Image (tube, rainbow, N blue to C red; front, side, top):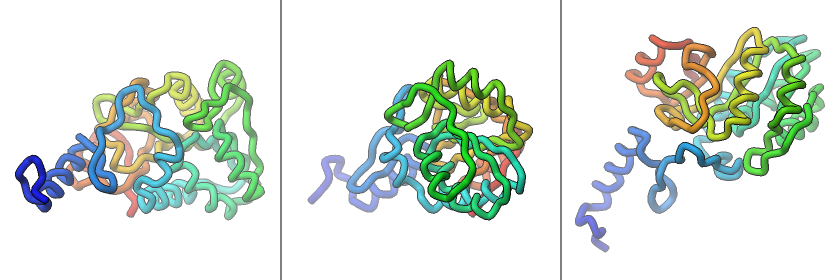
Length: 226
């Protein structure tokens, strides 16, 4: 069958690949879809199957930064979840998280975990709101590991929901060291609410081109994993 555009299938595939590399769309099975809008928050089930290899590598690298006897904050998000299986190698670790799913996984691995109270968001299974803010203001962390919906040099790290953004920002503020875990598909994506400047944290990522890495390295600290 000849496409409506008159272009060959190979040309369409190449064009879609080029557009995806420019973060103009996301290729899916059988076609493509628009990138996420400023305010749209994908459900965890949607994000869980995207770029699994990259997320696993990022999660393992992040877990390797954790040391024994530390108190760490784990944000919500599917990339953060890939840290959890590797945390069992650490002794006397205390984890604070605002993610119900992450808390459940941590309990399965018998890792000491605090889950402060708050309002539960159905899309991300994250706890947000004033109660969560008030509790986190009394905590201090050796390290915080944060997820993001998008990052760019100009717009920094962003997420659709201002309430989740406030939690991320506070966790970074309350931490000695902070890391954002985000694969290359989030690069040049911008969501509604900014929670950190690009220079504020260390970015743990994978899949960026040499040119993209060169540009980002001038503005922030990067850990590139394979």
